[in-house]
Image (cartoon, rainbow, N blue to C red; front, side):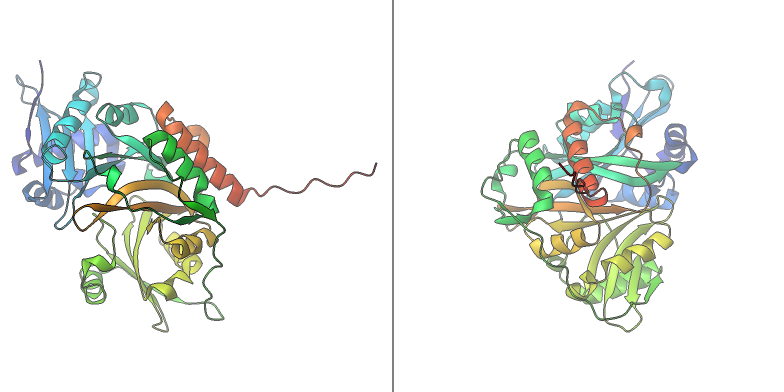
Length: 382
């Protein structure tokens, strides 16, 4: 019998937690499937569409998925896609995903929806691909689910959005393989974007900087709002700062979203930005000590200096999200996910479907160029 798909309610929370445990075990690091209070908040949130699937006869909850948005943003995140192991193979995951897209992208509510997809098997990649999502890149070692796993970034855009992107005049050379991959995979053109050398890294003050890591979400959010009262000053959608890294001399502060259970962190904003950029190495080491084996930042493709600063500290261009940010009514900006992992990457453990393979190849090329420099061959006497 075809499962019945409907909006989630707070009465579903207990069944939802059982579903996510059945699918992911005890290591699911997302509050959407583990924290009853956060789940209730999202179910009531007018910017979130959460659907569940139930068997008509038994009323068992066998599937779940949500698209989460936020005020002032026309971008959503597909998350919590889960189908009970006993009900896989019938296309339920694709039905849930397509129904969500109909209610968000199909109504003009959002410009794009993205998803981070596991690479332990090709199944999740094929589910989102069947629903019109296309790969944007590979996030190596992005999350700890029992062991360290890599994720793939996929996105689906509303019609006409990709055609209204703001041109980018130039990018640092290490981004060229990713741009070429996006051109082939999405049919976009970066023919007018010049490939140029990296800029020199920003100069910092002499001596080591000492950092204090503060995990006090309410305090961090209030202080963040003081420094960034205008949402146009920063852009990292669907992430809320919960951690502050402050220099002991007061010269700069960096705001981050740290997930200890998942072992990852997103660098959201620095104040002032130029000072923070000179200390990316110290920031990354502090977060590694805090348990973040994976650190990422979202950087405009047009910001050559910022991209060069991250490249100089071992961050790699992992994914390119075309037309991610809307400007005004009809223009969109491309963004790059720059990432760095402190743990060994098990490339052999990844399973990638054919459309994702070129992005894995581009990442491996960037990784080997950074960490496996080619040594000149010794001269041989004739």
